[in-house]
Image 1 (tube, one colour):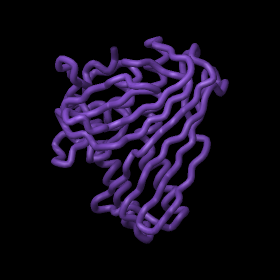
Image 2: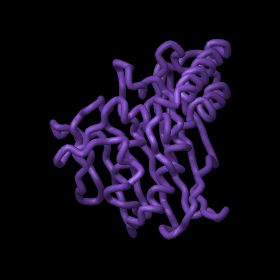
Image 3: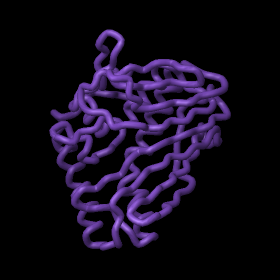
Image 4: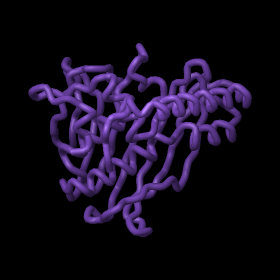
Length: 244
């Protein structure tokens, strides 16, 4: 399983170290948000890694909805448990971290699941700056460039087929709703196989601490992000193997 380098099974619990979570964010999702840096005291396990582990364990249903209900720190013992109508991911105290609702036919085909996971997390990991920056510019706002905070709140998808191969996933619509210092970005995507649409979905992000747009400051954040990415990619010794 291609996810095995990115978590550790500890009896009935899953643990994700800062190094494992950081490697998944960068090597699989292409996400260089500093909150996923192994050395960051505010390190948070990528929500897309929890998503990926859940699908690899329980399969892909025709309709699925994911809600991220709590941030997960390094090495937290997690349970992935099937419940009525879906899956619950919780910490050692029983506090919910991610809730999944699912319905319809389910496939546990490993190749299909891996293709969907890889395509989705690559799309998800590139939300900043490629999608979010143009949305903020269009609305005349920006996040706090000194302490940027973008929260992955929820995602859902519906698939017409579960037997496709070589999936592709692309953005088909986006919007940003601003309410004071809070913004809600909705990113709509399409799932395709051999150029044929076979599904659709949407991801919602919460942007906190919005303020008036300063293009120079925002560009400075984009440049810093590019610098973080370049610095990581220049150090092959930092990478974890996860060959497609």
